[in-house]
Length: 236
Image (tube, rainbow, N blue to C red; front, side, top):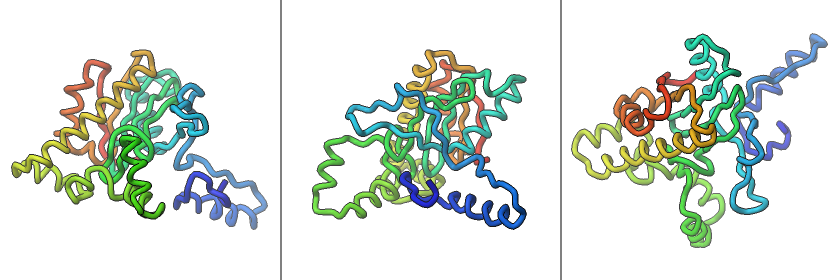
């Protein structure tokens, strides 16, 4: 998988090479643990709407698992006993249903769910088809969707503090996009509550945008009825 990374390159892939170089001279085995992502999805969640286009497990696994275990500890229970919804709010966003220690479904901003600061999330399919056949090269389309979409495409910034400043200065478009991001995230979290049959012990918000009280308060207004909410800003 490291030599032929069918799901994409990542700096974390270097960890396996480094571990091997350290272990070989010592004559001991090397293990690569806590990978940047993990696949624990239930089979029904893999089905999309087109055979051969299965949904994939991409999310901020390290931070999701870290804050989930922290919340469980604070509740005096084990992670494997709880049903949690974790929302990572950063440059990329991911929302996942954690069912008794396994991430059984996830929205990842690469393919679906809420937009992020520079990624589009779930986009209208026909519009994407039109974009792909608009004379642009594949690499350009991938760049547009992967690093020039989301909030950046509307407001020209990837710094959420700038978005908030524009909004506070009375910029109507910034206000709308600010509200839209919270709106989309709330929809994703509500969907994951359905995945867990409404039996949710806690909702956890994390990531850099979770420092922004306007966002977290806005989300709480929409999803507070589902379960208690804990905010762990930043990234572990």
